[in-house]
Amino acid sequence: MFERFTGAYPLDAGEASPPENIAPLRQVPGLAELVTLAAGLSFGNGVLRVFTDDEARRAQGLANLMWPERAPQIRPFAQDWTGRLYALDLHRGAMVLLMDPATGNVYSLDGTIPDLFDEYVLEDPNTFLAQHLFTGWRALHPEREAPGTFVGFKHPLFLGGAETVENLEVIDEEVYWSIHGQLWAQVKDLPEGTSISGVEIS
Image 1 (cartoon, rainbow, N blue to C red):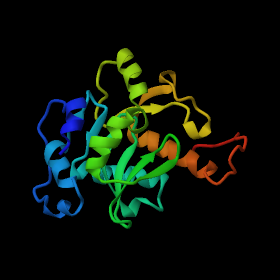
Image 2: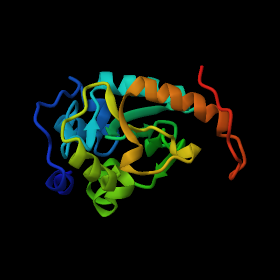
Image 3: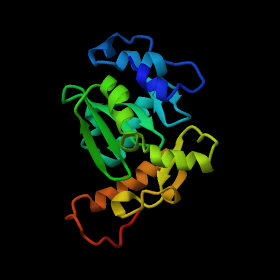
């Protein structure tokens, strides 16, 4: 399991920190194996990180800043380099979700965690890991981001920001989610194509 993914995106240095009791995780296909392999570690020079239990709880709190109606029912298990969360919807048979603060969208994935890593990501790395941006970003910024930060969009995509390397910056994850959450709350119910001006951040 995950051999195809780790062949393309090898584990970065470090020792995994899975929970002492992984038995409950076996109810979700692939979850116990994933955290045993990589909890607290990243793959592919930081392109994706698998959460420890503490990191998963923190990520759930961050998701609450943007999607308070969803946060109680999710369990984040990984995060890509742009801050997007991969999570399980515990109220929908542990469906895999991709939660994107840059677009405000939550995508439901028709498959399991092994499907995500060994099939979807490898077949479409630009969609699932923003690989096209990651390559350009790492060419300019080879150093790894500090803990508690990631590479986010300066101008949110849901406000018309460009999906380009020039629109990226290293930012504190809590600041990013808080700001995007406030902005998203102001615009999420507007009809598509609405001209946006005068959004405020408190």
